[in-house]
Length: 180
Image: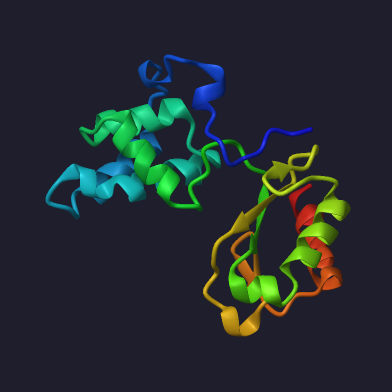
């Protein structure tokens, strides 16, 4: 069984995670510096810095979080509070494609449970897990802003509307093929 993606990698692995720094790459540092210039205080670029690191490595590790904290003159806990507030900042490795399945009231009423069950069975993972081949991570998400088209999911960067178990499984199969 895979470890759920919802937790960070900090608590379970290294009690001194706040001391370990993974240096920012040249590209990350340059992109973060460019963002910092747009704000009166470096801390205001926190979410942008997190997005930049995630874009380069696919997720934000504890060491990179610490590097961001140092770069923006913040504590690791302050950066962690921003990172964990946003559900699109991943604090553990994710698959090449993330499928975010909306579990809001509208989607729930329109069939969320059946979608989640069917896709979990197809992928042989539970919500919060990544397939063994690293192709797909399946995550619940609180709202995708398309209640009038429920049920809804994000497959990678594409929003899919009025899903059925069959249509969602087909999208997942296409995503897996593209990632391998």
